[in-house]
Amino acid sequence: MKKVTILDLKKMKEEGDKITMLTAYDCPTSRMLDASGIEILLVGDSVGSVMAGYQNTLPVTVEEIIYHCQAVARGRIRALLVADMPFMSYQVSIEEAKKNAGRMLKEGLAEAVKVEGGLNMEEVIKAICDIDIPVMAHIGLTPQSIHRMGGYKVQGKADREREKLLQDALAVERAGAFAVVLEVIPSFLSKEISSQLSIPTIGIGAGPDCDGQVLVINDLLGLSGEFRPKFVKRFATLEPLISEAVKSYITEVKESKFPGAEHSF
Image 1 (cartoon, rainbow, N blue to C red):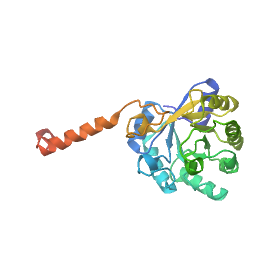
Image 2 (cartoon, rainbow, N blue to C red; image 1 turned 45 degrees about the vertical axis):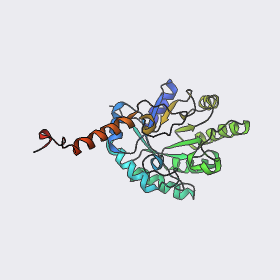
Image 3 (cartoon, one colour; image 1 turned 180 degrees about the vertical axis):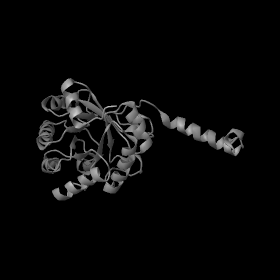
Image 4 (cartoon, rainbow, N blue to C red; image 1 turned 60 degrees about the horizontal axis):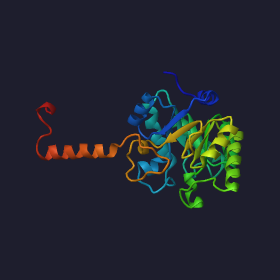
């Protein structure tokens, strides 16, 4: 099974081969996704909302990302492992950004980091790339900027916003990013950006013309309760299945049907 590298992703864009990416936060999920053939696993700061129950991604720490990244690293063989840089791990100073990015690789066993921001983070991305740490950029709806944006809203509707996003995309490519996530922007804009960049674009709520797509694994599997953004497709609905299995377990224990002789020593 050939290991996926950032060079493979560049070649996939050149050949029109769509890139697949999913979040993972633990070893068993990592093992299953990797065995299924996914190209990129992202230990996203979405772990705060999905696994820890935070209202948003802002409370997530470097240590939390490193912990989950270590777990995911143990489960995967082939996929490229990318770690999110959490809020305030790269915004304070370039030196701190480099140090924290290094921790993601050295302690978390990641192979690349993801940084939110465009023009405003060009120098930070360049500094991290300059010490040979691959960077995936992230523009459009950037969850760490939720308070400035006034919530989770589509970005790039107005002309000035569209121009800014295009400049953001060009800036992160110029800084050395090997790929860029485009989140919740109009399809025509993601198509334009994808055509202008030589690096792959990974869409989430950005239409079909990106070079790849990413989803949160819990959303894909139907494990997110009533939360269902327009851009999410549930490829399975596991929550009721799990609930029924637990109810069956409770019933059998209370009725002394489990454990039976076949489960006893």
